[in-house]
Image 1 (cartoon, helix red, strand yellow):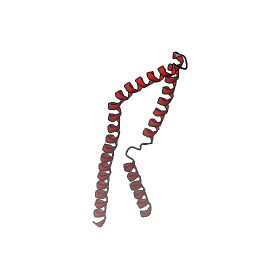
Image 2 (cartoon, rainbow, N blue to C red):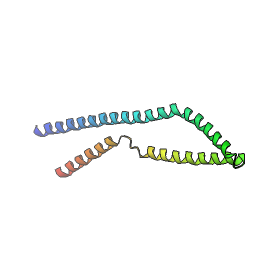
Image 3 (cartoon, rainbow, N blue to C red):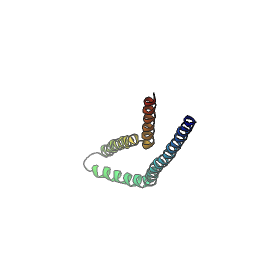
Image 4 (cartoon, rainbow, N blue to C red):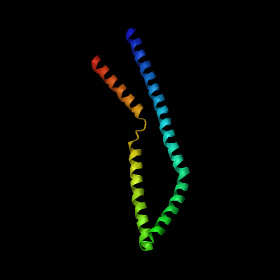
Length: 125
């Protein structure tokens, strides 16, 4: 009977541990989704303002440069600088997104739990 009781306790403990892991995963996933969603929303809301203002500034810069070089060269130079700046910005943003570890805490907890279970089983052998 004692063995059956201990086995029931182990099963109950494992069920409770699994339930806690699932709750942690849900909370962490919701936080990660909220973090990403808010940033995407801000970018989407401000992008049109930035694009219009930036377009006017680029035209103004090309018109100023036209005084010291041909108009086509001035517009090409402004376009090239924008292209390089955009590529660098996208690379930086993509790197930051790739470094964001989704559900990191949940995965760490699962690894710790599984290593404890494995050590426990090895100790029982």
